[in-house]
Length: 381
Image (cartoon, rainbow, N blue to C red):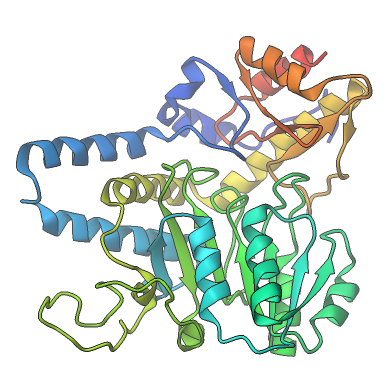
C-alpha cells in the first residue's frame, strides 16, 4: 500500500475507542513495543481498587477474587483457551522461566531456539544448556519453514516469539505449531509483542504454552502478566516457585496436603498483584470488545504507513514487510543519522519512539491516527 494512497481500515475503531487513550491529548505515542500508555478503563479500575482498599481494607476481598477469575476468563477468550489453562504471573520472564525450569530435562535433550530473541526468551534456554546439558539448536527467525521443520526433528521443545522485538517480524505460528505437533515437540511462544494487536488462537496454532506481560500491546500495567499452559501438558511442567497457593487446598490454611491445584493456578505462588490484575482485566476486556481481529489490520496498516513513509525519505527497514509477516513494529535507520539523537529530538517534538541497537523502533497501536503517523514521518530528519 503506497504512502500517499493509504486508507485506514481502523477508522471505525479509532472513532469508538480513541477517547479511551488520553495520551493522545499530549503525545503521538509510537512506542507500544516498549511500554504502552494504559487505557482509561485500566486506570479507572486500578484507581477504584486503590480507593476501596484505602477506605475498606480487604472488606471486599470477594471482588478481588472475581477480578482474578475475570482476568483468566478474558485471557482465555482472547487466545481461544480455557480459563483453567491460564495462570497470573508477574511478567513474561516469570512465565518463560516457569516452563524452562519446570520441565524435567535430561542431558542431550534438544531445544530449538532463535538467535534474535529478546533476552527473556534467550537466557533461560542458554542457562539450561549450561546447567542441564541440553543441546540448543540456534536458528534465525528469517530461516525458511523447511529449515525449522528439519531442526525440530528429535527436539523436545521449540521456543519462538510471536513478533520479534526488534525487527517486528511476525512468525507463522500455525505452520510452526503444525511442525511441533507432528514431531511431538513442546511449542512455547513468547507472545508479548503481538498479543492484543494480532489474533492468536492456541488451538489453531497448536501452542502448548505462552507468556505475555500486560504493559505493551495489551495496554495494561507493568508487573502483571499471563501464562497459558495447555491442560494436557500441565503435568509435564512442575511449579518451581512454590508457596501456599500452588496447592489444591490453599483456601484451607490448615491444609498440609501437597496435591497441586488441578489447573494452571498451580503456577501461581502466593499473593497476586491485585491492583495490576484489576487494570489488566479492564484492558483485556476493552480489547476483546474492540476485537483483536479488527485491531490487527488497523495496526498493520499504521505500521505499513510508517514503513512506506520512512522509505520515501531514504530510510532502510530492518526487514521487508509483507501482509503475513508484518506486525506493529517497524525498525528503520539512515546512514549518517544518529538514532539516539533523532529519538531525543522527536521526543521534544511530542513523538515517542525508541532507539534500539542502532535503529529507530516505531510501534503504533490501533488508536493512533494516520495523520499522526504522517506527521512523525515529516519530522524524521
